[in-house]
Length: 146
Image 1 (tube, one colour):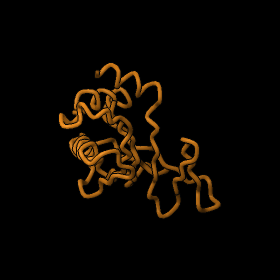
Image 2 (cartoon, rainbow, N blue to C red):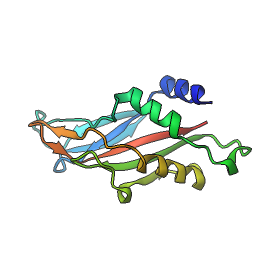
Image 3 (tube, one colour):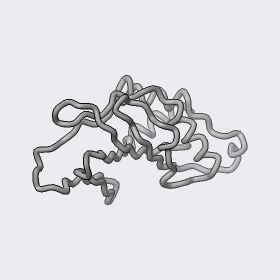
Image 4 (cartoon, helix red, strand yellow):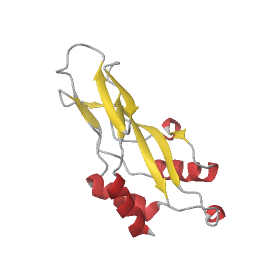
């Protein structure tokens, strides 16, 4: 089951969508499963680096494969799909529990599991602005349930 999760996640990709909250400089819009980041100001030299899960993508895949628990109450339901979660990663890499939001629900029990997974994540390497200063960033993340 875990191997299927990892392979499926690798095949379809993480589909990570990020929004940098850099003084209204960056917005996020999703079209056809592609993330488009536009600068609201004409100065395109402003940029930031994205936050990183400890161990990078492999660390994230490992965390999800080890920690995801499909609710027992739904084992025979056949419910499969993606719960889209949005959360804030602070300047210190922490994820405040009150910043976690379900953007697209699949089932209330799967939503709870997605929130649990995000709330138990270790601190991330924070996003940084062009000067190397740590910044807050809102992160949109899909969690697949198979």
